[in-house]
Image (tube, rainbow, N blue to C red):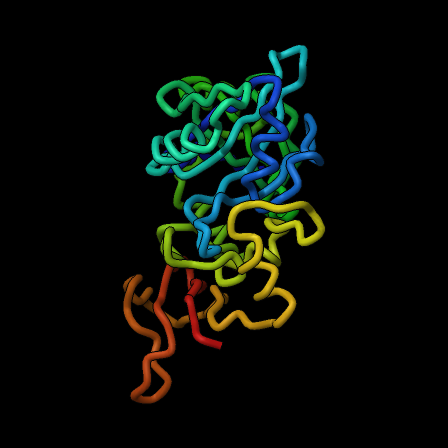
Length: 256
């Protein structure tokens, strides 16, 4: 088993009588199916169907105060709060950025059952393991409780890259990428049977026409890692951009 605290992840809490309905009207996944121990991967989109921010939605048990915790990119946590506040109107919800108090720890190559925070399976891919929302200063103790020690965040990143799972900001650009291009349709991030949400028409059209023009795809390389951000060439033609790389594996956003 391995564990790593992920410094690039933040936490936003959404709580209130209307919290589930409110989130369900905005997110790409069915928040009605979220329950303690059953998280969902989702995103908030622009009206044009492009990803503003992606996140994992986990629900705390009522005994622990309830509420929905959004495991999101820390750099976008404040923007996510601002956007949710913009949409809430008269909904009975309270949105709080807890990134200065809570962090996210990833645990993989083993099953995580921890009493140090909110523990949930990564809904994108079983091989990604589990995640725990907890105060960062408790991460070392939590890892010891799981029978392991904290690894560097780069260890988890290499694991993610080897599985071909893209990360926003590294493998695709927020505000300029459709969910299909970021593989959200393949990583259980879009529910195509749920009701309306912002950007749904565009996402549904891409799905039904099988019209995704670009995708984040896994690549392999020999010897030294090429620098992220360089063009991927087919002869003299640029066909995409290289993203994350680690240990001979990488991801690239390529035109299909």
